Amino acid sequence: MFKLFSLFILLTIMISLTFAQISDVNYRIYDAQGNPATINRIVDVAGKSDVVFLGENHDDAVAHYLQLEIFKRTLENYAKSRKIALSMEMFERDVQIVLDEYLKDLITEKKFLDDSRPWKNYKTDYRPLVELAKQNRLDIIAANAPRRYVNVVSRNGRDSLNQLSPEAKKWLAPLPYAPASASYSKKFTDLRGGMSGDNHNLAKILDSQTLWDATMAHSIAEYLKRNKMALIIHLNGTFHTENRLGTAEQLLKFNPKAKVLVVTMKSDDNFTKFDKLKDENLGDFVILTDAKVPRSF
Image (cartoon, rainbow, N blue to C red; front, side, top):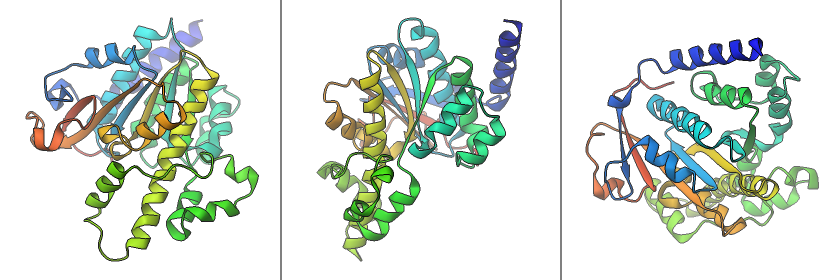
């Protein structure tokens, strides 16, 4: 018991140091229409949900601070009554076994990091959440499609996945995975500057993006199927779930009854002002973060 308590204290100190320079002056929280909201309001709605998508800009230190705070408060409020899990874009499905071995203390953190292909900002931005989940004996879902297969699609098209072995296909959403919706396709092409140049290559890149979305959605849906009444906190880049598109809409194809909450976080020089033209309906909650805070990498 003393050892567990000491580990908890150490973890708390580590987390505090990681985000020591960030506070509530560095962000503003709004509902979808731009009305002021709070972290506690997000957590209240999370309790009525099956999946909470926390969309981030990957280098946004304020967003990572908020992800941890929302995750902590979700545990405090619901861990006694529901099975809570952390799901992450940042780990691919073929390293699930490595992640599970680390969570069970079967392997060291060094071996875990050696074999799990962590993102370069893992230690500063994601480690606090992983360690909090580990400390509380929570499951973590390595949700994403292996990048090598995403690359196959971006180079050779979605049909090239049919050449994979049955073992390899287990790391992906069931084939053929659903194509991007019209709304998501438009959002994607607008981001890319419209349909110009080689449209065939752009379509393959969209299909590779959609493989990410479908596989993350399938990972979440499978966990919900195995764990009734679970509450999943999922981390992903903002584009994957903005406007309840991408991964969020793919999840509803696998589980139409899933109750989904989308929180979109984005950096903005004018974060104290909600711009309806840019920000309305980006999520069920929209958090604007101070773009002047130094990037995490």
